[in-house]
Image (cartoon, rainbow, N blue to C red):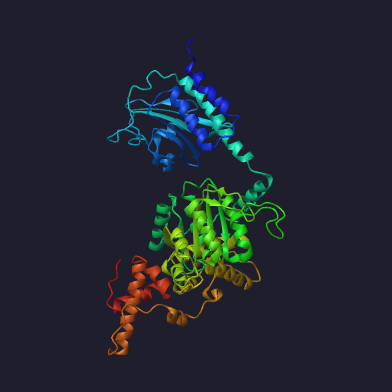
Length: 519
């Protein structure tokens, strides 16, 4: 009696449902069974995350496929597969681009896929992802029984659901509580935190985040206090293959030296006074995801040595334990110190520095970002408008000019706090709540303009010392106007606001100084 190929493929998978298997192994067996049922050159299991399909397991495709992210808006074939409840086979002359073209492993010449088949997976009646099958021979799937694939997809959905549930059940009660606290902290933010800007420095930062985010490299984020290093870490994690896993944060400067090791690596019961229960450290909480170590330069040298060992081997020991545990964590570290200088003077280990700074990423200071200060101010203004129950909260032109001319030693954090204070000061000046509340330069309480000019970097072109005073003043005014116009792409109104004068007066002054007045 001839064995039913569908049953031959499904029986091992049914047996696997009750087994405690690693996720990768469970998915590998799933794809092997699929290739046994429907011989082909390549198969893949992809999970739908938002508007992106993320490969979880592949067979027959180049290994780098697992690091790729397929946006549905760019992949009409995947859109077509998800639009149907059952299997779909594309015509061999279909003109839709295939995302796997050139990725089939073991074939020279980067051959395109010629026959392609797929089926969506539904978990609890919700689209979970896709199974895809591809072949270089255009006749591979000509006689395939699509009902068999549909039946297989149903069991595949049960497999992924079992995998996710078993992973959740493996956590003990305390682990669940700690994870819940971590996710609650992330979800409990009063507003979604995001990077904001349009300047060239900001765009360069975004390009670097995108470049290094989708990698496994450790990143050392540097920059002045208040520039938003934690936001950059969150963006790196969000752009990485680990985005579906937790991002755990630890401020190394906020912990006593005797607790740092426990916070990082965990402890067992009785390891020290007060250790009444076993506890996982930040590394174990971040397993599979990312760990953000803020102010990493504050770590004691003894802890630095143990951190280095985890980065080198992926193994750690809880405080008071003999057993080693393995973790898979990407480390994102930050410091406002010059760690290279800290290494030179012996306050930071050179080997740890090089492990952390595989990709150094500098966050620009706010004073280097031009008009981004106004975009950020608008974001904080809207926050305060809602908080204060106002219909409108705005900045006057003078206030905008003050913000742009200030040097911002405290960067974005200083701006956020300043806008909140200024909104309260402006509101306090009204006995009746106004329909539109304006913040003027006086509410900002910034240093006087003369002091800001004194604090500013020297002009790039200094007038010769022997010229008459009037000519020197004219040359300096001409330079300031030219620089302002260049920053604002020759928008005279914007340049006038920055310089704190009327637009018509600025144009008249520019003409007198011999500057070209563009329409």
